[in-house]
Each structure stands twice: as C-alpha cells, then as structure tokens.
Image 1 (cartoon, helix red, strand yellow):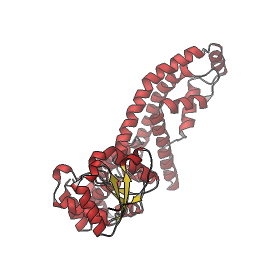
Image 2 (cartoon, rainbow, N blue to C red):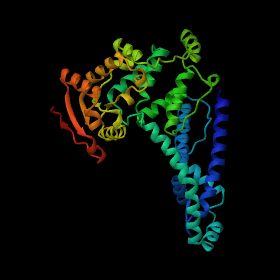
Image 3 (cartoon, one colour):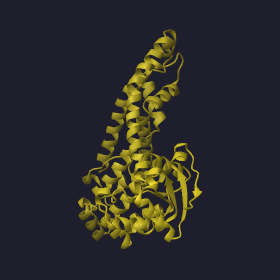
Image 4 (tube, rainbow, N blue to C red):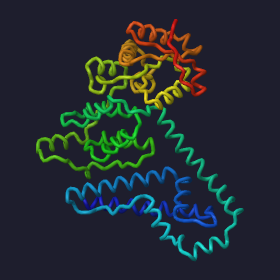
Length: 378
C-alpha cells in the first residue's frame, strides 16, 4: 500500500514538472527587462490561475499526509515543499535565474516584442481561463455560498459510526448544495478516506465542479481504519454498494414526514417567493443575501433534485409549505410575472397563515445591486 501511494505521489510530481515546465516556457517571452523568480510566478498565477491553485492545494494535501505519517511514526513517503518553492526550483533548474541568462535577457530586451508576445499569450490563455470560469460559475448557480449552522449537524451525523450508506448518500446530496471553505475541506476528507466508492465519487465530482484538487482513489487501494473484525467485514461488504435516491417530490415529502436526518434540522433565513421567469434576478438576489451570510430557500437550488416542474403533484405543495415553516421570513420578489403567478399567491397566503413576516423587494432594485426589503402590505 505505502509503495503504491509513494509511486502515485512521485508520478504526480513528475507530471507537475512536465506541465509547469511548459507553462514557464510560454511566460519567458513576456518577462520584463529585469525579473526574479517571483516575477515568473506572478505571471503563472495570472495566465494559469486554476493550474496554480491545483498545485497549491496538492502541495498542502501531501504536506498534511506527511505530517500525519510522522505523527503515527510511519515511514516517510512524501517530500513536500510549498507551491512557490516547487516553482522556484523549476525556474532555477531551467537556468532562468543564472547571471548570464539574466544579463543576456536584459541586453536583448524589446518592449515591443514583449507586448507582442503578451498579446499572443492572452489570445490563447484568456479564452481557456474564461471557459473554466464559466463552468465554475455554472456550478455556483446550484449552490449557496454560506455555511448555516444546521450543516455542522449534518456533517456530524455523517461521521457517526452507525450512519448507514443510505443516510450518508442523502446527507452528501444535501451538503452538495452549499459551497464554503469548510465544505470543501469536508468533501476532500470524504474523497480521501471514505471506503465506499459511491460516496468518494460524490465528493470527487463536487470538488471537480469547483476546480479543486482531488483524486478518485481506486477501491483496492483503500484502507479500513478499524481493528473490529465485524465492522471491517461490514465496511468491506458495503464498499461497492450504491444507493440511488428516487428523484421525485414523493421521495422528498416522505423524507420530511419521516424525519430524515438530512431534513430534520433544516432552517432558512428567507423563503424566496418568486416567478421562475425572473430566474436571473432571483439568482442575483440570492448571491447578495449569501454575501450577507443569509441562508435562502429557493426551490430550484435547495430542492432542485426533487422538485422538477414536470413532476409537479400534491407532494410538491406539501414540501413548499414545510419549507415556508422552516424559514424565518418570506421575501416576495415583486414583478409582473410574480404578481400574476397563482403559485406565488398560494405561497404568500400560506406564509400569512403561519404568521411569517413577509418582505417585498422589487425586481428592478435587485438588478441595481440593492437589497431593499420592505414589509409587504397587500
């Protein structure tokens, strides 16, 4: 096992050297008359931002692994430096910091040629950077950038020894709807240590969506960290078990009604009552409220895996009512679309019945980057 992990680590190091060697080659023509290793690293961050972030996270990951091995007196497998030190070593290995190279570059430097080279690099790199950023932005539309208190309870339930495979799948599906540093670290831990392949795969895809360093480890190289023979046998049996959640309103209503662990402790600051036709404005409102650390209920984010429009039924109504009950207040996004929406009127009526405070915000003010909530009076 240790020889395999050491081999995989060395393989990654060699791949990083190959990749970043090529990246550095593209940076050389745009260097100023005088430069240092930090100048080159600056340009790498600018033109290869996601590659740099992956390298940085990879170095941190293996440094943590090395500390863990040392803590338990295990044989050293990883010889890790931080990302900038790794890059500086490569820059020196290429001879770019030798006095002769620096002097030669300065003598033959041409600002015209530098600008021409940088324009050419921009034309190649900026579209690629934008393409990755668009993918990340698309993933961010399906999550909230907050970490409400109830998520800590869900993470706790997941880590319990008696948590079943089924419970873990439900919990991960809910945790995937949030994005924060804590959530990223949690999913990294799952991707690294979870024995069941389905759960590792879920964590892997979550991290991949946001361009974080992760690995999808093969089952035969996973270790079971318990000496209890019965528990070891049970974990081994469940290693390849998959549980597919029925993606229907009925399933969600059932989980809510039967106090599913991932549903029992949910709470929201605001329930957004709106017309789906105002999607773009509502998405922007959610981002603004997330910036203010508010956790929002919006059906096409919070329950998008269950509440599909083509599957609308009475259970959908039951779920929405429960979400209103779980929210501290309701925000009515006012527009010509929502004012004529039958479902928005039903939601507001039920909110009043529950005694929930209802705020109104005009769609136009959202588009002006303003969150101006006014008490809604009919």
